[in-house]
Image 1 (cartoon, one colour):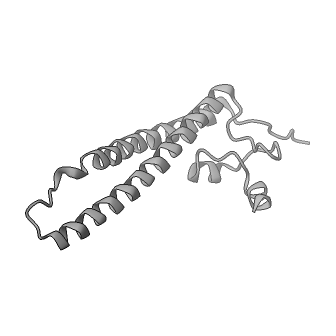
Image 2: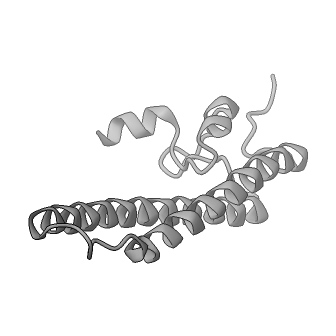
Image 3: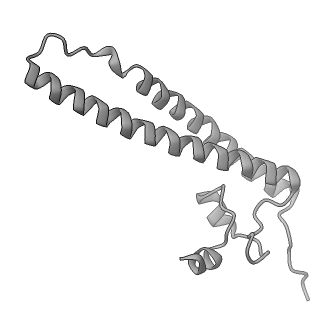
Length: 126
């Protein structure tokens, strides 16, 4: 009878660390770009347009700034989840479902490396 695996091996954890590190690097770049675009959106002035168009342009700029700000917040949250996954790797608890205690399948972790729930537990939450 084979023993049931309760955690991923150090080699498997290193594979996941590599995946997370790559995603984290890209996410940080994306976040910085979003943050920069929110703070630099005033670069296009509407001083030379008619008052009617100026109101529309200012409204559109405000809407774009808000949407970009929301995207930046989501990106920051994604970064925090990835960083938490790295801590779980250090603690050797990475890949263990926080509801069932079972190992989350590798395929799921490769697709969603910050996952803390197996599919069954996630579906039960809905």
